[in-house]
Amino acid sequence: MSEMFELSEKTALVTGSTRGLGRVIADGLADAGAHVVINGRDGETVKSTVEEMRAAGKSASTGAFDILDPDAVADGIARIESDRGAIDVLVNNAGIQKRAPLHEFSLDDWNTVLATNLTGPFIVTRAVARGMIAHNSGKIINMCSLMSELGRPTIAPYAASKGGMKMLTRAMAVEWAKYNIQVNGIGPGYFITEMTRALADDPDFDGWIKNRTPAARWGDPKELIGAAVFLASEASSFVNGQIIYVDGGILAAI
Ligand code: GCO
Image 1: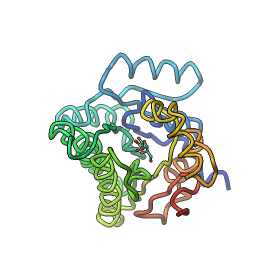
Image 2 (image 1 turned 90 degrees about the vertical axis):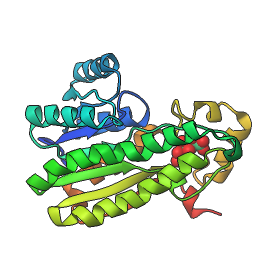
Image 3 (image 1 turned 180 degrees about the vertical axis):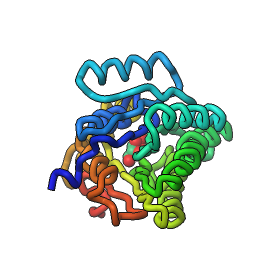
């Protein structure tokens, strides 16, 4: 049974994996046996993250590039494929959040959120999918969100981008399933990270989330690892276009 979830010999690229949920997922995939390529824009931060992981006995290497720069992405993916062979697993995790009333949202901020959260994953996946198609095998995991399904005031651009990620996941799945590529998503509920720290530190928001979440608590980022390993492994070989919501039950509740 455990072989089904085994990731040894697999190479996994996790975008935005020097911190937050991306780092936790990278560590989790490494603990499941994968060689993980750490990505971020800053080379020094990527390097120090890889050093930390190697010191903890994990198999990791650097993949520093800006997901919004198509040339940098092409070069970065070529380097990884030259070093490791085909990329077996891609986790499109890199993303940002900006909050403001929509009628006060600047066009620049709108464009930044949509570019980072939706166009970047397109640019990276387009490059990685070519190798997966050539090898007739691949796993793509798109980090969606509770906001792929629900809105909340002040985060409309983020919700639009994550709704787009849900449909991009389904569109990729139906386009590439014939190449034995499975494309699925993970939709986190509320987890305490840099992105949400200010919300968690606000007693009113903290109380609202605990009341709105049937599990009556914030998630621990480590609770996302199981879904990531499942979607990265042979255990999900006939799962396509699905979003696994890890949300403590929020989406099940009125
Ligand atoms: C917010 C938060 C959420 C979470 C997460 C929930 O402002 O409500 O940033 O968007 O980050 O995306 O799935």
